[in-house]
Length: 407
Image (cartoon, rainbow, N blue to C red; front, side, top):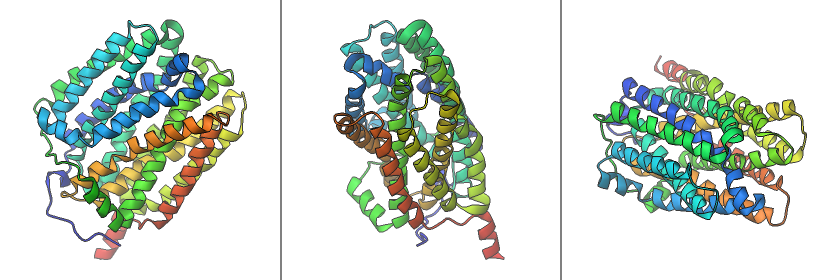
């Protein structure tokens, strides 16, 4: 059913192109810096605890993120706003990465890496709170599509360079590189956001938000789709590098594969956002994207080829689907809510840490009894289940449809 409870326009209902450009520039630097280490981090943990047990580190880390996310808005108010909170979290990331650049690999450094993952995950949410202040329903697909395209351009470039640094200077070089990246990010953020508007924040009422989700089928189903996407991401980020290394690929080849793999995020997301806004809505593209991701993820678990070209094609196709899901999920969700739905926005963001925790836990269980490929099978099952939710969505009206209705 179409939601009828739109309230009077809030600050969030009016697009601010200058504000979105600022956030996009920061997201490019943040995305590059984050991607510089997240795609090789599972190998870091594997040196300490073994490949089959790396999920333990991620499970603990994501559980902490999940708990802290429920209190993030209280922290934002205590610090004085989401912009200041972002500054504080990036400063903590600089400290952690600087110390890691001189520490040997061990249990102490592993704990510090987990701390780094926690603060950067919370920093992304803080930045997203600011971005949401600058978009409205009519251009949500375009705003989100452009934002994701620019952010993912930074993410796409990083693995090529980080794998070269890893071969030359090991993980100490990786952490020195991200220290520089986060320092640059903080400097630009202070310059660009120091006089920025601070969005209002409210506590997340979990029970209230969950009841709203259950009474709004569209919101419930898009949450399930979001959960499936984040489940896919965490499995792929943690276990794809380990799988490729086990097949004999060098870090240089893996860096090349990841660069090719991430191209769809740069090439497809903005055009898909525009098409969803103007002509088609999100539902059909979501179904196609989920179906493609499901089939390719299943294929990753089935094949053990050592062909560089084969893996470049397979990983590229996996992200064609994921890129579509990501931008259309965001566009669809933000078209379903309005200025009084802060609790729903906050609850929607729990899909990522919830999926991360459950994915890491299931991976630990599976790898205790089955080979590494089993984690890709479980990711494909989750994607397949989410297809049901995609079919149950009521499609949003595009500009063409709205125009024809008015005429």
